[in-house]
Length: 410
Image 1 (cartoon, rainbow, N blue to C red):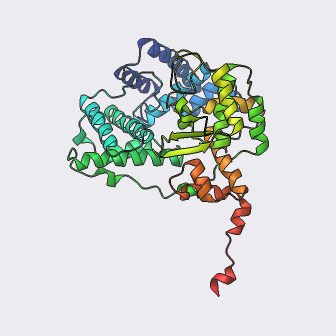
Image 2: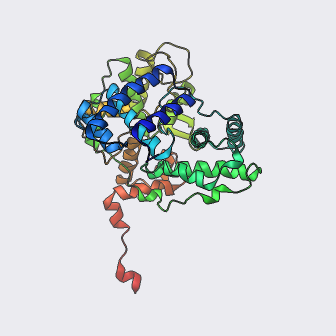
Image 3: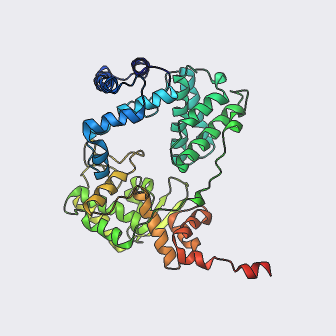
């Protein structure tokens, strides 16, 4: 693909868009953007596509980099940015990796569709958590879709070389994302081999990641920034009441975002002042105290903010359809919105989603000399090893772990 001229690359990409059933209206939009890009490349005297030149066009057209730094990119500019990235993806991997159309079915091969359905049943039999089942199925579907784009439509034709090509598309992603993809693919490939759907155990050909999650330093907030974030939320409107209660559940109780979205009215045990639920990630029961500020925030939302619709879920969308948030909605954008309103610095080195508030609670509990086992129970960790990662953000506690070299070698 790298040797193709820009015009030939675009022609092949358009053919792939049709194969994936993009609408004619969407393809017309891409054609219009491609014409502008081709004109720019011709003026630059460049025959082949490079993302560097593509991004230069984007910056000259929209002042992209300055707007991105200021957090003022419009949806229109973001859509144009995706056009450039799609060209780069297709040139490098011969496949469309970032999919922006709304349809859910990525696969065209009937054999692969049956394979995916069969694997979903396998995950259920293995009693993976619902979250894990969802992740594993989607990752397997993306991999199979990638194989289809390279004219692979039969399971026995899948080779280690094809899988290596897919894994190369993950370059640049975070360690956690790559680890999740590899775990999912190993599970999927072992299922194929165990039930003799493929003659080779391709799971053994996947690379191992040397890094461990203990190598990652969690992103944490200062107490002042958490207070500023909560204070800036407009609790005078329904959406503000909802956002305040959801963020408070993370910041004060450390609930995972998925569990907050799945929280039901009958999980709130008002007489006992407790929240009792089954965790999505671990499928284990969790019981936490319903702290007064959290409880009153939820009551305020239920009485004065929540849409008047029949639903067992506590938190709902406030725009049609009035239903619970989807599993894909990470609520990251809502935290960023309030960070900007509170004028809290947005550092590219630190995560800014709901999970960073969960990290912050764990670190604060550690500073208060709360035992790791207790923090583990609060966060719903299966093992205290998962909780031990927070030791890295507490320098004073790390100093307590330091060894005396003289004592070691005596």
